Length: 87
Length: 158
Image 1: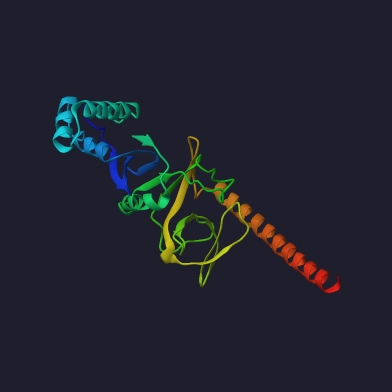
Image 2: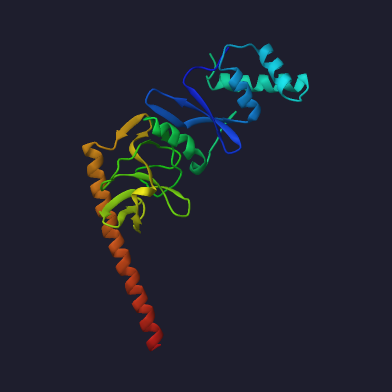
């Protein structure tokens, strides 16, 4: 799985926003926000990756237990799927 | 990840980056000053890079000295700057300079319908709206003036 083409993630103050970037327009009306961990996962999801690879990357990067990391990834992916942001 | 309202002041650097690349950006204004044209958090406005000089009826996004982002209409172009007024207001703001202009609205979405701001129907709306508000503004100015005189006379003779 990976993030669909045509989305842009940018840091705005203390959070990150994802917006749909068209050929001519960028829609800030349909933007979604996320935190630092979400932004980290987003970066990994720019390339084809698996849930296991995301888990390993998260455990390597952050001081978090496996159960919590799995739950965070699962919740993040579910929201990406809900927003139709995943291929 | 959640849908969220972010202040335009925070979003602007990201919007500017896209506008500078030649793209247009779409966002929902949340103020009421441009009613009935722009309904807050319902209608979506499209912004593009502003030309060097604005003209009457343009709707620029500009920055006030106090840091406030404003989307109002140019109702007159004077030597010392633009005169701005929201469609839902009658008090005019004078002396807005070119340096304060960040972008210009080129159209808007009302539901799924796109309204271009260079269409004949839209220009006619602008003319009517600006004339109506000007007359109302003059009426209010006279009414307030008459009210002040009345108060003065009351103080002197009662």
